[in-house]
Amino acid sequence: LVGGRLPTKLGGVCVEAAGVRTPMLFTGWNQVNFQVPDVAVKGPVPLEVITNCGTAGETRSGIEVVNLADSTPAFFVMRLDGLDGANPVAALHGGGPVLVGDPAEIPAASPAQPGEFVSLFGTGFGLTIPSVEAGKIPSNVPRLTDGQAVLASEVTITIGGIAVPPEDIFYAGVAPCCAGLDQLVVKVPSAAPAGNLPVEAAIGGVSTPSGPYIIVQGP
Image 1 (spheres, rainbow, N blue to C red):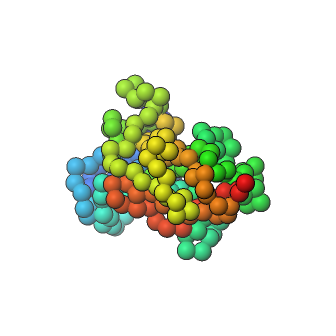
Image 2 (image 1 turned 90 degrees about the horizontal axis):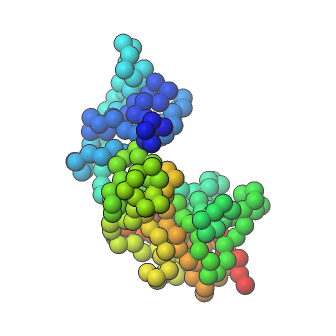
């Protein structure tokens, strides 16, 4: 981190989206993780990966065109190679640190209980109030109270097909710890049955992909 923000060059690699350098999270021999930068355009934008960035041997990849939208929400998952995307959501009991999950699959995790609050993590949830500049760590932004910024669009969520009422959505916004990470803190419905319950959120009418779930332990 430099000045409370992610670098735009990591391991000699840069990425440009619509000609703007992106905040970088990870680089590997076959993978690059980055945060989409703040750009004014929406719709198709060019994307390039640059190796040996800023040197005489700089090399640019071919241009790929990606679609940029106001929100493209998706949950992060603890990948277990589930069929059709069925994997456990990256989730914590309350504010953590204990993971929600099946301890037989995720060490030290435990199932959620009906009526408890859990934190669900994702990305692409869209604009917030106040806004947070791409690459900034929210907890390092002085104008954010406790590093929190709420989503600008309406949020709905279902767990096991049961709609979570608005009053049981405690927080929906950026995760204070990390750039590009979004967080929902919601109460598991008291009527939730035991089992792997699919979780789906809609941000401004755009839904997360189907498949992710949380495990709930019955009474």
